[in-house]
Image (cartoon, rainbow, N blue to C red):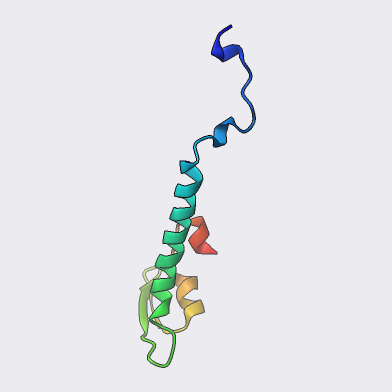
Length: 80
């Protein structure tokens, strides 16, 4: 009997434990990058951010919600 005729178990795809770890690490790095972009605009010494939108408009703001709204984030976890 060859190995191709044996049906695979449903959990065979998760034998490689490295993939979920890489995905988790990618999510953490993306969330940290967004947090670092917004962090310096918060607090009593918050700095203004100058953001160029996709329509080539320039927005200057120190409001975290405005900054996040105008950022084009590609990573799904960082968008949240």
